[in-house]
Every structure is written in structure tokens, then in C-alpha cells.
Amino acid sequence: MSLTGPARWSTAISRIRLEGADARRFLHGQSSQAIELAANGTCLPTCLISPTGRMRALALVRPDDSGADLLVIAGDGAAVHQALDRVLFPADRVKLGPIEAVTLVRWIGAVASENAPELLSPGVDLGAGAAQPAWLQLPGEPLPAWLEALPELSDEAVELLRLRQGFPAVPGELNDNTNPFELGLAPWVSLNKGCYVGQETLAKLATYDGVKQQLRHWRSGAAISCPPGTTLFTASGERAGVITSALAGAEGMEGLALVRRGALEAEELFAAGADGTANTGVALQISVPGGFVAPPVGAGGLS
Figure: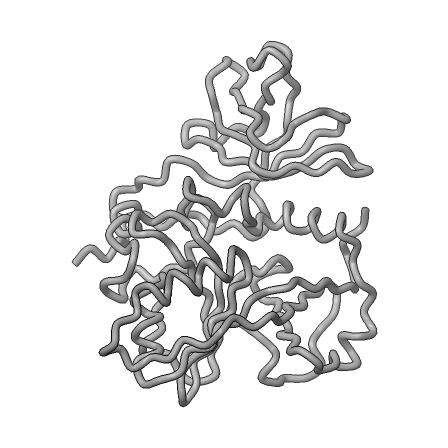
């Protein structure tokens, strides 16, 4: 399947509006990105994480004169809204608006012919490369003509692109067992902005090189069964990780996996067979996804 484009794909996402003088400060303390002093009109990528640094959602933040838009692009928007509402205090000058359904449009093989408020340029990989922006499609508004003219990718092609770029999704990669650095999301995290939810955990991971697993792409030309949860082994039979996503296509099977630190240099790992070991499994080719950014080391900002 060719993914050279030009083509586009659309994803339903959630927009949460925060109004008030403390909106930026509030989001600054509830997510991984430095938001409080950001300029109006910027688009900032951020992770919404638990106090122990575990993934809950990925979002983009757009600050403006009266507050900020929080665009939940991966994860449960309703759960994010509920979590924010739970930690709002009467003294906070923030009004949390309702969840609004909007659409994120991404594309490959084309260049945006206009610059409008709906064009999002966070400077991170949203599934089509770090330099590629995305379009925020608002309810009832048409796409610009240049974007409308691009053919729509099939669901299979969209998933294939996601896997090859390594863009995390629920439930395989975004869950209570992963942190941003394991998923290659270092640019989504500020290590120098001060206190925020999960900051201590992420700072320690960076300072002490504590990331124990990383996201990898895997591929097999054979028609095999490797569903999420399948254990991976090294050639010597040691546990090496677990498959998180899988897709059967015309070129065989491929997907994503969380690979243990000791096996990160392996170009080949083995999926567990019917007996749960590598003895009856098949070989998988392992590579770094196109959008993966290595975890930071020695820059935890613990001070």
C-alpha cells in the first residue's frame, strides 16, 4: 500500500474551552508543557498524565487573550474534562466550558496553501511528520478548497501510517502502564517549567536515565497471529517486550510494541507462539518508528 500521497484523513477529537485570567496557569499545572507564558496564537503539544507520570491523553493547547482551547487529540475527552473539573477550586479564575466535538484533519504529500487560525503547527509529529501542520475543522464550516481536493485515506491506510510513524493511541499505547518518554513524546514535555502533575516522576526518569522500555515498530511478511498482548522474546529466549498494536495488510503483519531496554538494539525479535514461548513463534523485524523521539537523559530539571 502506497502512503506517498497526496491524501488526507480526518479524526474526531474533543475541544474544551477554558475562559478566564488563570486559564493558562491552570493548564500549565495540569499538563506537561510550558503554557503559562506562551504567546497568543501558538499551538503547544502537551501530555495529560497522572501524578505518577502515566499517560491519560495527548492534547494541543491554543492560548489567546481570554483563555485557551484544549484540543484532546488522543484519549478520552470526557475523562479529561472530568479530571480538570475535579481539581478546579473556587479561587481559580477559570471557567471550564463543555466538551465540543470537532475534527482534526491531517494530510501527506501536499503543502498548505493558506495560513489561518484553523491551521495547527505544534512542531511535533501528529502522524505525518514533525514539520507537517494539521487543520482544525469546526462544526458546520467547509474545508479549504486545497484540502477538500485531496483524496481521503482508507481506514487501513490511516492505521498503517499511524503504526509506521509511531503515533500512540488508546488503548494499546496510551494507558496507565506507559509514560511520555517510553512513547517517544519528549518534545511534548517541558523539563524546566516547574511543578505540574507528574513532574517529579518525569524529572527522575530523565535525570537518572530511568526509561525501561521504548516504542518500536515491528513487521512480518508472513500472515501470522500477533494480537496486542503477545509477548516478545530475544533470540536467546529472554522476554523482550509486548505487542501493543497490530494490523494485517497486503504486505503482511505490522504494528507497534513496547520493547525492554535490554533488547532495544535488536533488529529481530520473536513473537510468542501457541505455547507462549519463542520456540514456536515467528521472527519480527524491529525498527524505530518515524516519529519517535529518544528520551532525554540527564536533563530532569529536578531543581
